[in-house]
Length: 112
Image 1 (cartoon, rainbow, N blue to C red):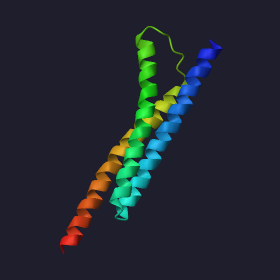
Image 2: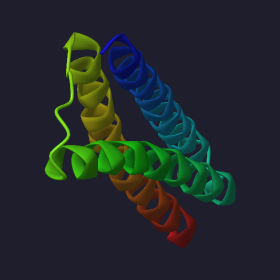
Image 3: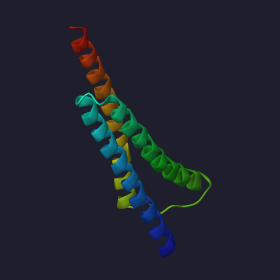
């Protein structure tokens, strides 16, 4: 039981780390686009997606375990990790939209 709790807590902490990187990379991508560095923004968003996929893999593994009948001891740390992941995914989507807006603004400025 104690080993399982430790396993779930380690997974939760790893999820938090990947979610944090997802959000941080998306934030830096948005700032790069704001400065007109669209290639850099695209690369940072690619890296953000990689981090998000790592988090999703962990989350999916837990879902599969539970769906397979394993009783998981889900505590506050796991709930917190899910909040982090959800927030990171939302932020990443908003950053993607901002990057597109910055591209369009630059295109309009170039036409003048």
